[in-house]
Every structure is written in C-alpha cells, then in structure tokens.
Amino acid sequence: MKKVAKIIGIFVALFLVGCSSVEILRQKPKTMGSLRFMSAPYEDVLTAVRESIHEVGLNPESEYAVDEKTTAILATNSATAFSWGDNIRVTVENTEPNKTAVWIISKRKHAMDSRGSEFSDTLFSSIEYKVNKIQPPAKAE
Image (cartoon, rainbow, N blue to C red; front, side, top):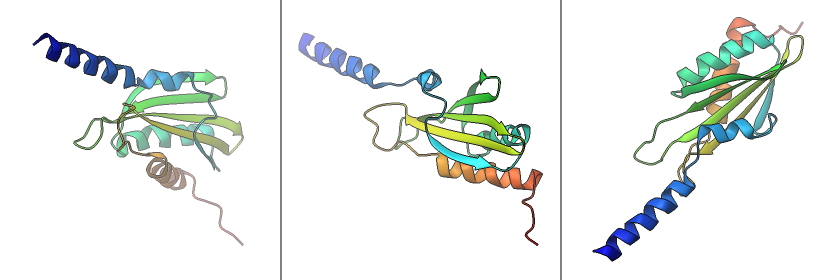
C-alpha cells in the first residue's frame, strides 16, 4: 500500500510541475506571439479585442498596462475532454495614429497536454471583423 501511495505522490508531483499559470505569460516579451497590424485607432482595436475574447469563448483573467502605449489581456479557456485548456495573452500596442499592432500568444496549461489549441487565427479573425465594422477599410478609387 505504501508503494502505491508513493507512486501516486510522484505522479501528482510530476503533474503539478507540468502545470502552467496564465501569469507566466505576463513575463514574456510583449512582442512574443503571432503579429498582425490593424489599420485602426488603438482604442477601437482594444475594444474589438475585449469583445472578441468573450466571443471565442475565452475567460479574461486580467488586463494591465505594459507601458504607456501598450495594453495586455490575459485569458484562459476551460479544460475539455481532449485538453487541459490554454493560457492566452493578447497584447495591443498603439504604434502610430490609425495603426495598431496586436500580438497573440497561446500556451497549453499542462506540458503533457498534446491537444492544446491555437487561438491566434480564430481570435485575429474576430478582431479584424469587429475592427472593420467600426472602421470600414477605405475603398479603392
């Protein structure tokens, strides 16, 4: 019985070592992840990011100022039958008037999880759709 308890203890310890907190993404460089530029004001893009996070089923954990021109939002998604879930950071930077940079980084919550999702494409699509509704692209003449 002691041997079984020891094995379970080792398994639990290894499992916990592999777990990742969304706060780990806070320490990553702000330019880490997939990048897209949006031809829209910073505030419009930030609003679209906030709405999109909810729309794609993520749970916002915190929002913070990285610097005077940059905001980051940390989010998670829940575990499913196929995955322990993911930690996501979306970083929005005011690069110049009507031009905003957006980086998305997604990491699995558990190192042993082989089915973690990549949210960049889905999230970027939602953000771009919302930005275009707010700020339609200029028509070519």
